[in-house]
Length: 380
Image (cartoon, rainbow, N blue to C red; front, top):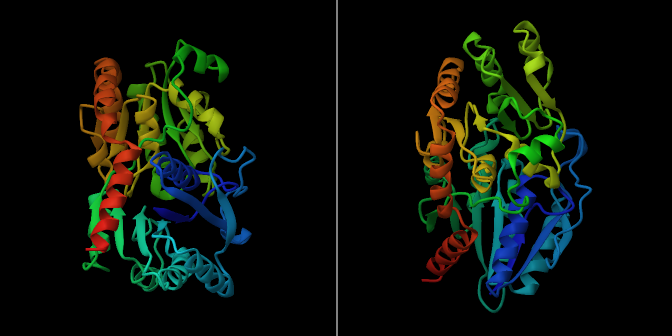
């Protein structure tokens, strides 16, 4: 089958690019003719909250990535739609995450799906249907995009429920986010700590990924400031770039006098560094205020790390409570209570074994099978 994946890829950085590249590699390994059409311009600079959209790492080997798409140029959308139509792929696969991309993706899809040899099928993998940070245009833009697709994959039940408010007449499959297994192999805790110049005598919580209000880092900092944790030889690693104003977070650190126990890596973490942070961690903490699913959980599964997540969106579907970690309310006391239980009752080995058992559910071949199943249903 000829498959064109439309979305983020090298030279852009981050989870979206990693996901599309890993998915394309899986399709290729299964004998499909798969390639990625990515952006020449993904976000105008003034709309991007980070320091750079680009990676300085090499492109994935043995994978065709073509930069053609401009997210804000309607003439480009039309041209790329006709270009894809001329190629006659059986499937146009789009990874969707935000209504900002709806006009671009929706226009390309409408044009590309029609050709003389029969319609290409447009399948979407949804990160979100409704974004975490909402605006008044979201429903209008999302309706335009969802009207262009023939089938969908959702990675959590909450996203599936959101999709039903826009489309009920297309095949939809639920398939959890696969493991991010492209960040290297497990290394020993001692080696990871040595490379990060951290003491083996301490125990480490890890908050990983770019920082925005909905991710609840402030809740974790307030939880970490609890006096019950002060004699536990605990350190909190915060590894990721601030996409919000960092002042409120640093004020929490200052007013609670926990600066010596919070280790900030305020930058984008490169792919070849990811293993260090996860292998150094004793517990990965995701104190989100809202969520659908999270790539961070899938990195944690790959590196066989127990997790503490909040009971929002689809996170509880991915992390079985008291088997692979904790699912708690999104408030500081609940987070603190779980951290105390983890270390006082020595849950690390028990939960690590649970993670090892659970991770087999999240493979890339299961995702491609779900995509193919949805595709086949669009032809029936």
